[in-house]
Image 1 (tube, rainbow, N blue to C red):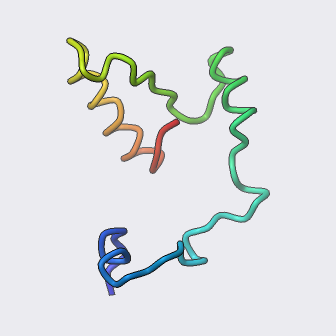
Image 2 (cartoon, one colour; image 1 turned 90 degrees about the vertical axis):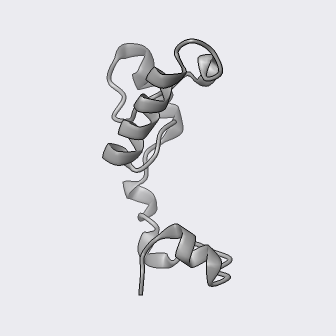
Length: 75
C-alpha cells in the first residue's frame, strides 16, 4: 500500500487518515508562527507568493520546493 496523497485520492479517500494527523498539542499555532516570522523566530518557512508570476518566479518556486521537502508544507 502506497502512502502518497495521490493514491489516497485515487482510492476515493474523503478524509485524512488518523495516522497522518498530529495531536493538537503538537500542532503549530498559526498566530505564534505569524508573530515569530516578524522576529525571525518562526519554525516554518513563510513565503510571499505575490511575485510568483514575476521575475522572481524561479526563486519562489525553489523556496516552495525546499519548504515542502524540509517541512512538508509552507505558510
